[in-house]
Length: 502
Image (cartoon, rainbow, N blue to C red; front, top):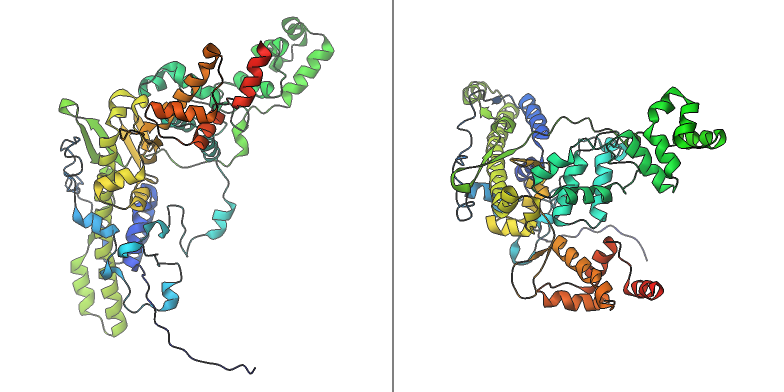
């Protein structure tokens, strides 16, 4: 069969986001530091852009001092422009896009039923630009904070315990030591000190061994316990590290009550430990977190939400300079350049305004949903997911996800990332309010603890039935996952242990 060239015409449909809408999406997920760098680069590139050095008190139209209540939280800051900027329609499409452009993945978006855009495929906060340094992304060292957060997600912590763990992780320095007073932290989060200590005990089991220690002695003790080498003699040695530093062997022998050979072995074991367990990870040299939104309590117990004007770039389009250079354009290339600069400058100013309004809109709804935490503490965190917030403010989940990435909320209880306020939920079987995953875990533990009284071991299926009777709609595999996270053996193993004990 002979090979021959053939030219075919094919017709197809595709949806491509305009560069302007892609820029608006990108701006939405940038942190305040990344946004500042982006704006500086745009000012250098576009001669029509200039910084607005006027006071920022009137920059935000959303009336930041207006009270935020359950009934008016979203109505107060509703702005159709902000929503439309994040939801594409037929005006945002390339009319003459080629099939190659439509399928390139650069701007193409999958269509859902009913003509809606599947924003979940529009990229995430971790995406990179074509001009970005891809090699640096591949070689970037994982920080200790990132390593600990990954373990936190796998540890089965939910609800209040996960919130406490997130705050504790933020309090760990580059060496792996916990630099926070637990009493102050418990008071700030509005929970009991024993609960914070219990969460800390679980976190001290994370890798690398020795993290979350409050001093050198505790760091070394955690490592020795993992090696099963923490005995009374070693405890006495750790209590007198000052004598070890002075190499006072006679005093150490008397304190530890061991002979010379045992003492030398103990000191050798001590030298093999790591006094700075976090040093093996990449250092995070980023500056202190600057909140994007402030929350404060107003009259009558209502919460006031306002944007941090210091983190909002303020730009102006120099119309006078545009008129000067537009009149002096000598050829089509110059006219096109001036026109593109004006269009780009106007769009960037609008995009920044819409970004600010969208952040305020999402933050206000989060505050409305989690006012119990602000008023009473971490134990009153409500189950919350992206869909709940998105439905309440009329946006897509992916838009809410972008807004909550790298954005921080300053509250009377501290500064928290917006993602901090999203906790897992277990649906109610009777149609009532959902249960937080943490409360369900406590119920499972309480039921299993009761086996010692009833002398009847409960299988995972039986636990599902009992939980269903209390209004918790949960699957057997979820019960098994929570039980394993609590380090509780299976019903077979528990039955064997109970039989051996008697």
